[in-house]
Every structure is written in C-alpha cells, then in structure tokens.
Length: 566
Image 1 (cartoon, rainbow, N blue to C red):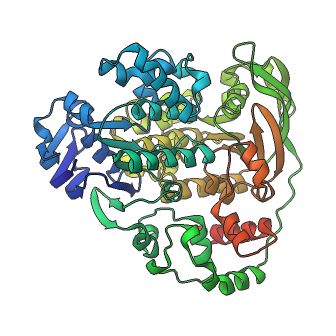
Image 2: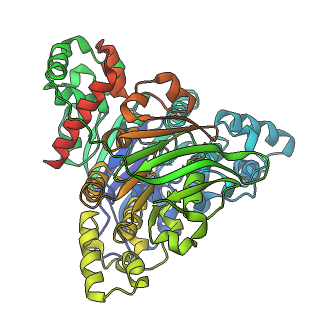
Image 3: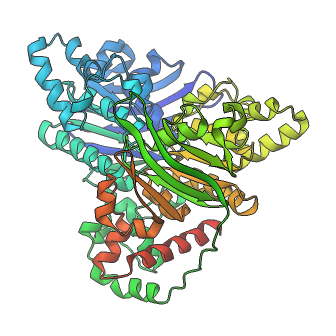
C-alpha cells in the first residue's frame, strides 16, 4: 500500500508559517522507514497527516497532494484513515478509550464486530506479547508511563491494518522493553508484510533491528533520505543536532574515520579490528578527572514503603540519601516504583511507613505548597503540568505566585526560555508546540524558580539531542554554580551516562543498587534485574578486550562533556 506526498505543505491555523514545506516522499508497500529530526522539524506533523488528525481534528491549511494506495486523502473521511493506518501516539493518555487495559486492547476488534469468543484469546495473547497479561483488569490511568505505552502498542497489534505508524514509541519505555518493542515491530514487518513508519528521537534504539531508510527532517523539509549506513557515516546527524549511536561517538572521539562501507548502522556488523589501535591508543593516553567529594546531605529517605491498594507495595523499604550538589539518577523498569518515589517526595501521597527529610526537616510537616517552594518536579507528561494558554504565562506563573515584580519576572523568564531554546516561541500558544517543545516549557517553568532540589522525570522524552543537551548543560551550570541538587528519573542511558555521577537502581519496588554510575553500567546482571541493558559503549569496550569498562566509559563521558561545552 504505497504512500506518496507530492509537493505537500501544511500550516497550522495558529501559526503564520507552514510547518511542512513542499514535502516529496514516497513510501512503498512493506517498507520500514524511520523519520528523525529536531523537535519542531515537522516529523510528528507528517504522522498527523497520515493518520487523519490533520485535517479532521487539527485545523490548518494543506496544499499539494497526499495519496495512500493511490487515493487522494483529501477526499477521505476519518474512518477511511482508521481502516488503513494504526497509530501509537506519543501522548498515550489521549489515546485510551477503554475503562480497563483489556477493553482498550479489544477496541479495534469490537469495531470490526469480532465475536467475543474469538476476541478474548487474541487480547490475551497480545497482552502476553507486551507483558501486560497480569494487568488486563486494571485501569490504564493507574499504570506507569511505560506500561501505558505498551497498552497503546497492544491496541494496534490486534488491528488488521496495512500501515502501522509509531510516534515516539520508545519515549517512556525502559531499555529492555524498548528492545522488545523494536523486535515486535520488526516481526510484524517481516511476518505480516506491514508498512512501518517510526517517528523517533532514539535512533540507536530503533536501529536495534534493520530499517530500509531514514528520513531526516529540518525546519519542515526533508534534508536527507538515505540508507542507515550512509546516513551514519555522514556528518548530517551532527549538523542537524541528532544524537548518533554511542559506539559511533566513541570511535570518532578516538580519531577513527567511519565509512558507509564499514556498515556503521550496527555495532554487530562493524569490523572492529581496523579501529582497535586508535581506540586503545586513545584510551591508554586518557586522564580521568577526579570527582570532588560531596558530603553534606540534602535529602534522606528512610525505610520508605507505600502501597496504592494496600496489597502490593509500589515502594518497599527504600532508603538512600542525596547530597547537596549531586547529580543522581534513579533507574529501573516501568512500574518499579520510580515515579511513586517522586509522588512521595512531592507530598501527593504519604508513605505508609518511613519518612523523608530535606535539610534535616521532616517533609510530612510541610504542605504540598511549602514543599513546592523547595522541591521542583518536572513530570513525565507535560500535559499534566501545563495550565496556561500562552508560553510566557506558563513559565511566569510560579514567579507571579510569589509576588515578584513583573520587570524581574520578564528578565528571568526570557533568560530561562533562551537557555531552553524557547525564546522565539515566547508569545506562542502552547497548543502550537510539539510534545517535545511542551516538555521544555514545563522544565523552564520549574527552572525559573531555582529550587534546592530538582527532580526530572524522563526529561528527554520527546526531546531532540541538541535541545536537551543545551537544556541539561544549563541545569548542570545551575548544579555547579548555585548548588542545585538534581535527581533524574530516566530510561535514557545516554543521558544518565553523560550527566549523572551516581545511580540508584530499583527493581520490583526494592532498592537493589546505589553506586557510582559507571560501576552500575558495567554490571550486566544487575542491569538485567532492573530491565535495563548495557550500552553500546560498554559492548564496544568488551569487544576490544578493555578490562576496565568503567574507566573507559568515564573517559568517554569526560570527552563528550568537554566537546558539548566547546
């Protein structure tokens, strides 16, 4: 079922310039393609055109032609799109239609009038495929972000459509589940002959399985349409602010020249012997800067236990401390208790057992508002935080609540918007932004308050590499110069590698590790318990018989940080 854009443009009603500009793109039946690009480049808008959200749910002006199976989509009703295209949206909450996980998975089957007796085994087997078989009776709203993403994935796996569209399918998933998701998508592509379109920032994770082509977008235009090996060997990813695979960055840091004929799209396909001399010489000449000791405790969690239903503990006897000025990561699989810890610190829920101290003060004695003056939390889904129509007003809201002079507010807001790459959008309505841009707005609204403790829940979800690097370099600057303590909850192993010095690892609601980050990342068995995986940086070191994998990763991180600052 061929898809073709011919001189296609689209302009949102709320914007004065088109988001898509003269797009010419042909996707053949049975192809698997990946669309990448910076936040706001237009890649999600292409997805909305394919699934009918544009023009049926989102107003704007189209020109040119989009055809699916040779038919002009401008003549389609919404039902025509749903019969052809199955979609997993980036914002899973807006996609749920059932009261339970089982009902949501079964929705497409109900629309096809599938008999109940036939429906049940299909729903059950699909739920098993994405590890949701024990949650069929639960409400989707009770699930973690990653579990919600798996419900959405299951909902289209049961649907009999020829085209499957995935908009940031990995954004909320832990690394092991991400790999399994890519494997499921690949199996659908191979066994069922589906046409697969993946819109994703996490390029290395998508390339866990082969793809036919990668489409690179920038400022509403297609700037590259290439085979993966060709694109990864070029300078286009760096030019357009897209994060390249970790192993590739390490090889380039060591002075290696990687060509498309070297098959760089996968570490497994690379002939590493040709790079060994360069990499070992680079590493053997390395000098690792010692991390300064930070001993003043800011946050202490003691024996923390909490259950949502009184039966199963979401957090089970968890204890750890975070020192002032630290940059710490909390890691674990979806549903392991990471976000529950955030809710406990915020005061949204109170622990069944245990206590939380901030600078020696029991947080149970403070109201949620009082806690919010000292602890800033950026939630995983930006739509759960935004309360204003305009971007400037959203970021200024907390300062205005404190009664600060409007002139000072203006200076602070503009400064933070600049650092978060949002200054040019300051007078825009939030509805006109992509999901990733909304995420930056919520981070800016917390950063402007300069809290003692900053908790970021999946800060890179929906973010392009250039945007989140600039933003996190700013956060690191606040960490170094103002002493703001930062805790990141994330599945993004590259982010954790590059910015955090210590990792707290949860598995099945219990703490299983609290150690320097590179030590954690050098223990495959420990990572597996938390549904995490070793990074390609570790795998590169092992492949080259480098014994001190922790030091190898530490030196690479140091090199990357120096490059980003430059």
